[in-house]
Length: 222
Image 1 (cartoon, rainbow, N blue to C red):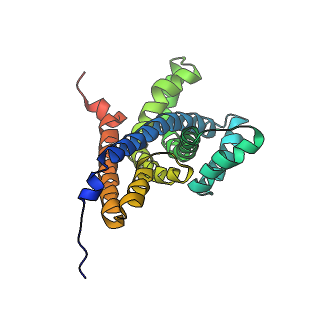
Image 2 (image 1 turned 90 degrees about the vertical axis):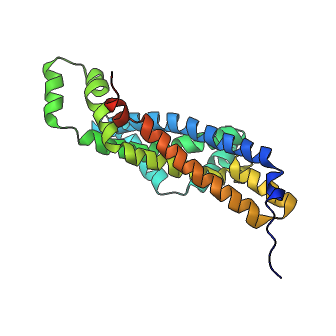
Image 3 (image 1 turned 180 degrees about the vertical axis):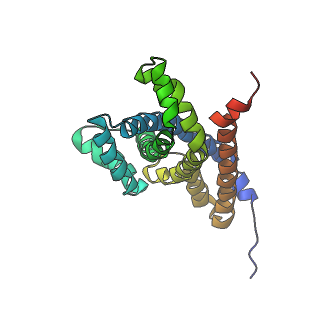
């Protein structure tokens, strides 16, 4: 018997889909801002060998890059309460996203910093800039511009990875899909719709990041 498609059963729950989409974007936005800030700090410590933080960030990066995001999430949500650090599902999801993105962006941004021409640093030193001033005005902006496409891709990857946060009952988009499918038993229509939403979100987030990136800002007339 031919399968009869019925997307109306999914659209009845459009409020849940919209709410889940909004929470996915919120989780991604908070994670991106805090994760990139952590990545910039880590990249500076690693690129300039600031002891002992360079070693601490080196261990942190290797630990996160060589373990699954789902395990990191479970460790934060189920493991930390054993040490007295109890987090709700949203706090755990945000912390996991920040830690994960922070590790990957540390290495991406470090590559940009290490590609800074030696002459630019010597010019900044000749102007008697302090190290923080040199990093803020001379090193960081061109470093971010060099690696911004890779940063954008990593943020999108992390956004798609937030789907596993439904495993700890964080009510993001995949959680909404599971909820809808459990009510209407229309698995194909439900996950087809959610797949399309994730696809559009990935395109939109990547384009927004590119437009907001340092390369685009530098091209705008002042």
